Figure 1 (cartoon, helix red, strand yellow):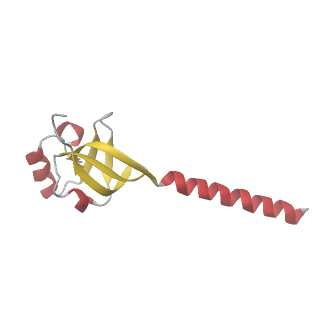
Figure 2 (figure 1 turned 30 degrees about the horizontal axis):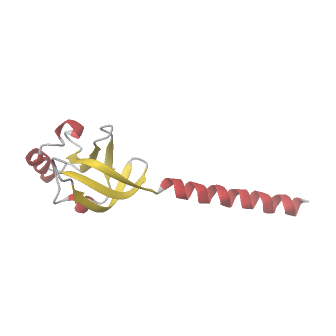
Figure 3 (figure 1 turned 45 degrees about the horizontal axis):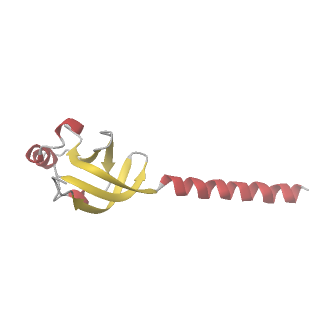
Length: 110
């Protein structure tokens, strides 16, 4: 009986760990502006300001169009050519940080 209990407990633990790992790295697509962590959401649409702040040491961030939520970017080189731009990014989100796999400029006026 003790062996059966141990096996059941082990199986439940593995199932929980698998579910946690899946939830932690959720792939998503976000449309918004690449800003910087100095000016935050309110300065994200000013490309020259964002570039200047990032050159001065600020970290790039992603500001969502949907709700103005902010995601940290763990691979800032992915957006180095898009500072202050309106983009759609696809990547993996974990605890408020996105690892960007692709960046596409948003075509304005559509």
